Image 1 (spheres, rainbow, N blue to C red):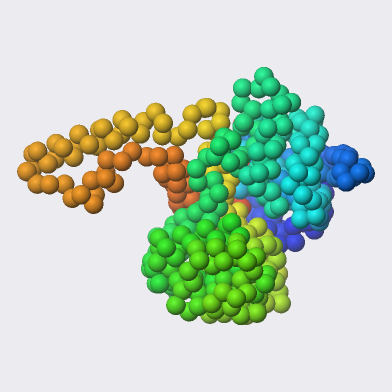
Image 2: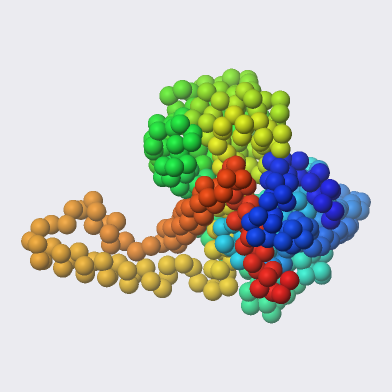
Length: 473
């Protein structure tokens, strides 16, 4: 794909980072020719297939783009949307390559899409369409535990991943690792605990890592600790919901605004996120919930400590960037800030935790699910009871030597072995914290690196370049 088309398809702050990186390529020790190669998609496949529905034949168009195979399998979601385009899929595949390299997940980048409006089809019809799409992908080795592993994206979820995995198994009955052909599956079908919450949980861990870095936190003017920090969340889908829930219930942050398509909820004392989510699930709208106001994205400009756009791309553009008051913005969605807005915010001194890092929790836990499927055993099954026996003996020894009773409220926490959800969260937190340390060090060690986005890009590009170099490229 040509560089111009690539940049046109992105249209977000990611473009700004690429342009700057090209200028810095030689200074960071990466050959500019290799940088250009890294920005190009290796291959894109277009499939068209027919499905007889409602008494007639309907033709669907699907895409699967492979950006980089410096690691295999390649990884990336499949989205169902009426506006899916080839350029968009290729750009998102590139972003996946950079994201995986950044968090040291050994996957190349890929992305897929089907041009369809899921709301216009019944569940049974969607299943037939999905299974036919799977057949087309499988014919071309565009789905495979060892080569190409899709995941959920916009318009898809656990249900679609279960259909894909089941169809792949029917097509490859002798494939021992067939369930590893996709991630994001239901727990009962080879999924993993913590996958649904993973991206939102990753946002929480990213913020904790940022607030623990006093050098970077000082640049925002915010005080230490997440407790009592005021938060605006745009979008209460899967990512926004879990991020808001965990920040408010576990870190004592105050979510004052939730912005949705049908309006917003405002409560300066803090919104009960679980009750709001339950209300939306029941009523399909936020209208009628206490604190409802008809305003939408205009509320992004309200005074707050942390702004989390978690819904869609390009919600902050050159038209509203100068009105953003939050000193810290966390890109929970992909590309919520335009290239022009990114420059305005940077000139204003705003700190942006970029999407490439902030929302990497999903692919990180997808990696854990893939490993689980290959090992054919759930995490914690072998060691949990051994850990409980070991720590139980340790506590018994302490009490016998000291003659004092071990505090009951700590005893259970000390003895209980790690369940799968505990191990997943531990691995995710370690990934987000260690990655932030590398990004921060890069940001603060080079005077030409102006923000966290550029620092993250440099870390990712250098790691991909090292992989290519080791392959003799």
